[in-house]
Image (cartoon, rainbow, N blue to C red; front, side, top):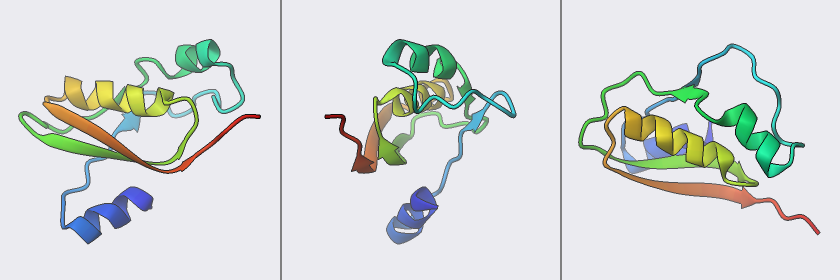
Length: 93
């Protein structure tokens, strides 16, 4: 919903990426290596994004794994520039 709101506010097209599997193991509680093994190469963007610059909008930034995987998927779909924006950064004490 956050990405849709940003796209509407900026009058930009919303591009959705999807997980390859209907279900994937929740990665939030995993260590970075475990998180990467669950998320790596699991997202795809089925739209042609050739030559586009994109902004990835995520609600929570923990390790950056989801943003990195989403960036990989949109680059594979042709995006030439990718940036990210996150509403909340989680911190561990």
